[in-house]
Image (tube, rainbow, N blue to C red; front, side, top):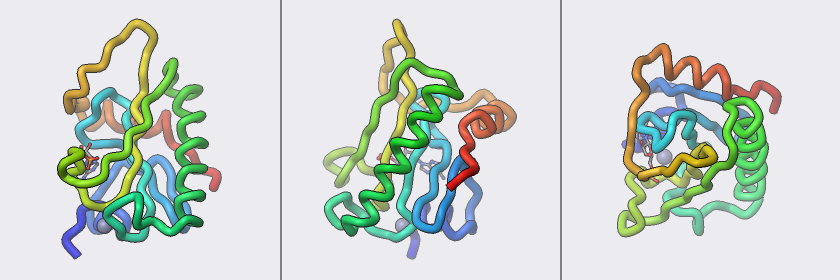
Length: 135
Ligand code: AMP
Ligand code: ZN
């Protein structure tokens, strides 16, 4: 299947991974709305939230919660947005279900435009700060 997130899951293309367990992977978004923006992705390929088995959704959202707590403490940031797009009309560009976690800062507006890291080194710095090792 020609799915970019399945390729990240099976390791055939690289990603800046910050967490992995048997069912879920999380990695930095390559075009972040804000540096530190990451994605939580169930390993099994389904396109939409409505197709995700309930048990897997429960596990995935608990990982979202845990990694978000880590983000607040270790980035650090003051808050975060949780975003989850379903369907191209809703601006879903990768048809493999995923949750966006976007760091927010007091007094700093977000223009919701895709950005970039200054360098691979900068991205590695954010990856190191946000990596959670325990499952
Ligand atoms: P969505 O619009 O909700 O489908 O979001 C898909 C996200 O995946 C976008 O924010 C992209 O920047 C991100 N993305 C696409 N390809 C990659 C990749 N290879 N590594 C990390 N993030 C990616
Ligand atoms: Zn997929």
